[in-house]
Length: 148
Image (cartoon, rainbow, N blue to C red; front, side, top):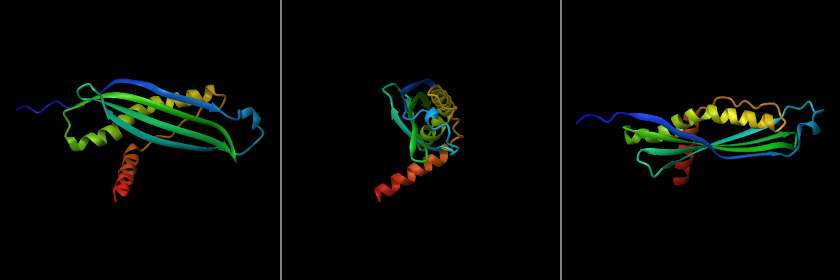
């Protein structure tokens, strides 16, 4: 019996939800020399779709930006991709879904975030590259602690 060919491909990618709340326009605090505090939270959700070998991966980004105690803006982006994944051993599926798929989605989400922040009246926000392997490890450790 021949081994099944390994396939990892993007079927579709799209914005599921995008929210930008400009709470205090930069013009109101333009005299401040303080650097903003930018809090970026990332989360990855995955689901099997109804289609054979197709999985949905959602990269959820929540950003809160403050100067001192004044919130400038809050942004949330849920960016999704649907991936055709077949021919991989079961123990590789979680790393593929939680590391490789978000890694493929991230540059597009990063661009959307930068453009939305800029269109919201602020300088573009360029997120640093993300260590999705480290993020995956943290999520696995958190799940193991909950089980104990």
